[in-house]
Amino acid sequence: MSVCPWCREALPTFDKSAACPKCAKPLVDAAGARLRPLDLDFEKFLTDADAASLLWTKRGAIFAFVLAALSLVTIVAPFTILILILGQFFWGRFFIARRYTRHFAPLRRMVTRWISRLVLVLLVSPAYAAVGIPGLGLVVAPLVFGGTCLGLRAYFRFHFLREHRREGVTLFEKAFLVLLAFVFVVMMVVVGLLVWAGASLLPGGK
Image (tube, rainbow, N blue to C red; front, side, top):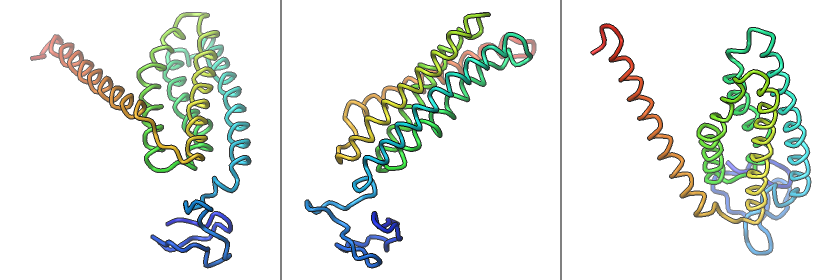
């Protein structure tokens, strides 16, 4: 179900009216394209998303530094890398991307979400291994966490602008998503084989 971009009242499914039955304002622009809230309040949405994502990027770097510092003196040390990885996913999804992706069309939302997830798994998560080196984590953790947030911010902002211009997802991104998915499947198969081989070497293993 869609909503009127002016009064935000729900419109009947598959409604093709040229004007809202509630507020009587036009539902299509001069070119005949369906109006969206993004078309009417683009500057406000962009300013709010930019400000919020930058603020949470800074907070994310501080969070990572504090966590790395605590790992030097508390029992959280064995779990620092795991907490950072999970925190990176949470930060990227809810604090960085959400204000941009809420305006995306379904295909763009799906593609950007899965590309960001797979990049975090395949490229960013391994970088946190350096946090396990005593002292080095104080530098690596905030750099990786904050840098990743900045990268995600730039990526989703890029698509926010394309969504406003009604430009589709690029062919390169679609191919890149397929490549990332293939690499992820191969990695899972390799990990599964290694686990199976390790289990077979245990006493009683076959």
